[in-house]
Image 1: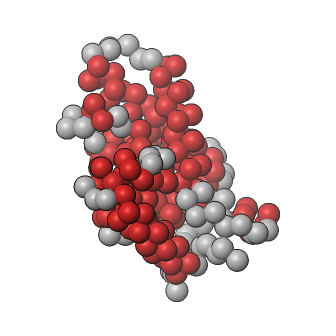
Image 2: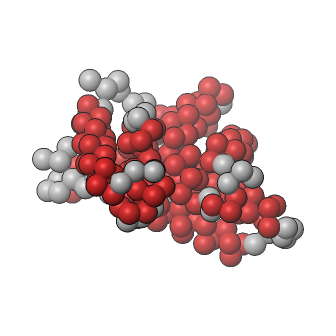
Image 3: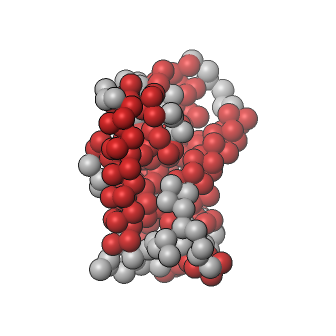
Length: 209
């Protein structure tokens, strides 16, 4: 049985009351989610220049400085705010390596929109058909848990889900990237989704019934 998760409202209240440790608890809770979103945005032309871990580290540093000023009350508001910080960091890195010096607000807005779309795709990796509206409200931010669970899967399982479900690549392209046959990738994908479903159910946060 999964350990109970500290409600985000309590975390934010602790933060505003000057609990320095709350900053770490807030950010560690979303680290895997931020890293996955960052990976989905970094173009292949930037590989070797900066990666998801670099971007997330800078995002967390900026978030730590700004968190005391965050006034949202819900997890949805916090995630939207963190995506905005991540978009700012990503846009800065792209500018740095493309040689542009001035801030491009349009690029940051576009990056925010792209991150929001990626977050939505993550939420629907395991669609739970037939759940009630109240149940869906409870699990509204399940993509955070899913990103954490996904980060703990075997690497080949994680890769096939990211490439197939989140980046939307066809089996043939996934096979090329993983160095396997298309048939082998299809089998791997089915096993990976089954493992992900089991892990989510074990966490007590998802049900397909």
